[in-house]
Every structure is written in structure tokens, then in C-alpha cells.
Image (tube, rainbow, N blue to C red; front, side, top):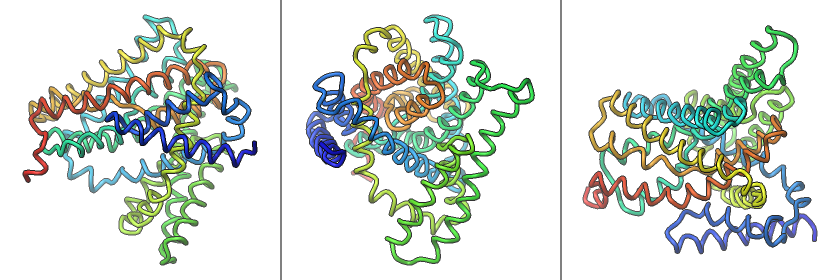
Length: 394
């Protein structure tokens, strides 16, 4: 069959699986991953490994859009309204997950340090969609709910920054950077600052050009063109395409918030099919044979990430003098993990092919676990905090 047929098949299979899994009170992304695993090379083989390679460009497209939208959540005006408490929680829950996962995998499980750093960076990501779905379903309202919404909004942006830094250090440790000490120091700085600068420049160009068009379709074409262009240029210059796209979204939303708001609404209106393809393809890339061999690493990753998230969130809440309910229960709402974590594993395949199979399998396997238990933990948090049903009473 042609690649066009497989695109249609994956879209319909993913859509059906997402609707079915919703009846089980689980997020649709879990259905996308599971149906991908079922039809992929590891099980039924309806979609071959060769076909998955042909679909690889879709991953880059989806990741670029995801990073751009995440950057759009980084409005300095909104962050000021949230206060220091939410910001401190976000910083420390990211640091908590990164630290616990890195140290656990390296010292207790024996994973090489540079690989443990990559695991640690990926562990900091959270899936806001699953958490937000639970909060809306149970009409939650209160200090815990408000803080949780703010934290998950900026969490993935911090993850991309953490991954950019961890990757730079990992390349030095694994000796992928040659040219002496000067090159070892310059490479991480160039990758981080260069990505941010490239994204900022493109944001200025995007806002300047976009405001000249009134039709939504014109703005859509220009915006998508800019997103893909900045991602491609970043890869050509050996920068981080994720950081560049995120910086583009962040700069745009802070330089011209009104224009950017319209642009983001247009992009969100067409991103669902791309996400379905992305997550189904991610599930199809899950290798069950490798998963059986890396069981200890997977278990250690899952447990250490949860501990790091909860302790980090609690410490940040205490430091920010947040309400008691926030200190005790907010960490439970940060367990889901999906989009950005999966996306980053695809970058690992480019940067560290020698450990890509290990990292991809562990992360994809853990995502299925997190997406199953995560919504229940979020529900438990708002129930314990006494915020269920409060939105309907407001």
C-alpha cells in the first residue's frame, strides 16, 4: 500500500482508539499509543518498520508545532499574575525529577552518566492535557487547581530548556564534541543561546508579516511556514529545533500578545490530526523485545520520577508559602507524561543513536503507565483538597 493509505489508516485507527479509551475515563493519548503498539512491528505488524521510517517527517512537524505552542504559554504578564509560588513549584519539581532520575539511574542501576542525564531531562516533562481534562471533568476550583494549571503550563517549556542543557553536557561527556576545552565550552553555549536567538529573530519576522494579513488562512500559511523554517535552519546550524521553536513562540507572545493570540488560535484549530499521527507513530515505535530487557531501568525511572516530582513540588510550595493543600497534594497532579517527553526521544535518535533504543523504549513504556495512573492521581489530589465541584458553585 502507498504511504497515503497508511496515513489514512493511522488517523482512523488513532481516532477510534482515542474515542474508545475515553469511555474508560482515560485520556485519548493513551489510546493513540496503545493502538500504535498494536498495529506496529512489535505486535500485528500492520504498519511495518519501513513504513514508520517514511513517516518520520511527521514527527519533526508535530514537534515543531508543539514547541511553538509551549513557548506561547510563557507570557511574562501571565507569570506575574501567578505569583512566585507557582513559578517556584515549577522550577523545583523539574529540578527534583531531573536530580532523582539522574542519580538513581546512574548510581543504583548503572546507566552511563551521559544517558542518565538525558533520562533526567526527559523526566521533567508533564502532560498538561491529561491533568486539565480531569480538572474540567470534575469541575475543580480552588488554590490547588489554580496553581496546578499554572505549573503544568510552564512545565514543558522548562523541560525543553533542561534537555538542551543536558544534551550539551552529555555530548561533552560522551566525547561527541572535539577540538579541545574551548570547543567543549563553546558547543553548549552556542546550542542554547543560538537557538534562543534564532527563535527570537523569527518571532519578530513572523509578527511583522502576520499582522499585514487579515484572513485566517493567510496567517496560518505564514505561521506554519515560519515554524518549519526555523526548525529546519536550527537543524542545519546544529542548534536545538525544539528550543528555537519554543523561543519563537515565547518571544512572539511577549512582543505582540494580541496578534499572537490570533495566531495561536489558528494553529490549535488544525493541530489535532498531526498529534494523532504523532502519538500513534510513537506507539508503533515501542519495541516490546527491548522493553523486557530494560525492565529494571524502566521501573527505576518511573518510581524516581514520581518521587522527584512530588518532593520538588512540595519543597517549592513550602518555599513559596503556598496553601497547605497545595503543599500536600499538588505533586499528584504532575504525574502524567506524554507529548514533549515522546518528542524528545525522537531527538535522542538523532543526537545519541547508540542509546536511542533504550531511552525510547523506557520512555514510551513509562508514558503508557503514567497516562493510566496519572488521571487517577489528579482526581485524588483535587478530592483530598476538597475542590471537586467547586467551579459549578462559583
